[in-house]
Image (cartoon, rainbow, N blue to C red):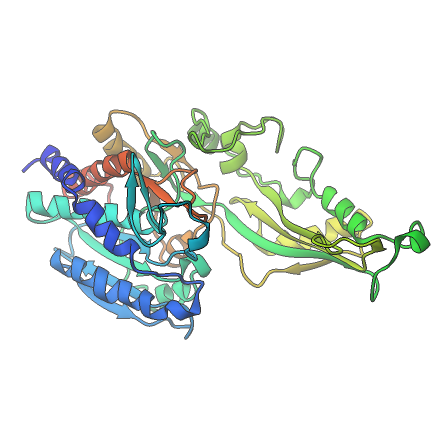
Length: 463
């Protein structure tokens, strides 16, 4: 009954096919939360797949309806061994984006887990079915080895993360006492590099908005009216160009954070951003000058134009279009006031002479920024456990570059949040051919088994 035995048990779970069998069943359930016709599948994932698996490991499960009356249900599971022991809150989401079946390459089906070399293909393999399957498999390995965990676990699985987690905040507010714990330890998102274990402590926020210029009722012949009528595409292009310089450095003062502190810089100092063989090359001269790539994506804000339309791109005609629009996004970090993001841009556009540009916040696409201090005791404890397992220090990101509903756990439940991702940046998680790397999954099982073993020993951070 040793730590090494628990880790070995987790590796056997992978090597002997248990992990792949569990993940294959879960991938086969078509839990597309963006498809209203899949509500039965979302419920089946929780009730027919996850509940029996958790109950076999001694969890007590409760299905929670969505308080908003829309969006998918939630499964709450808990294994309480002793109220005096530490309690870990963990999370996963069983929903996936649309399968995009027709776009997967020949020989692959999003709903059939397929192994090719080191890759496990299937929708949800990386986001997020594979990741919570790893964590539950590691919990099972500790239980089989020690006969108990030595700590308590509370688990929440949602089925609406890919549609903005509707109802998650309300569920946590309504069940705050029931969900109380000492720390969140969960998994989603990518490692910094495929071969380097990673911890992240929060997420960048995201706010989407639309910019538009609507000048007249219809188009007008460019030969007869060119040079006489404002072109809305040109006006909007210049307005967008005023938001950053030519290399993407942000010019809106309120969007430039003051939170790139010495502890954050120290955590990012030795990090190399790299997406693996299939990842894009980094543009070294893009973004805020004077910052490293890690500081630009994890410690700073980025403004993106996600779509830009004027006229009819599919069938252009010789006419000055009446209208232009762009869908944009700000990824922001702690230190930027989310309530002032849109007003600050409005002030900037007006100062810059673009009062004609209409600014409309999107109804969807908002996440708050969160960040746990890299010097927090739970961060140091988790990093030491991982290093003990793999023999190398993990990368520690003050926050992920992407966005998750981590503010619900950090702000509503008041938890220190420690995320340990098991995927990598080039996994195609929202695209055809989504996959999980088998060597990373096997190592992640060992890492999580080590963490869960250590949680049952003396010496975890004070409650």
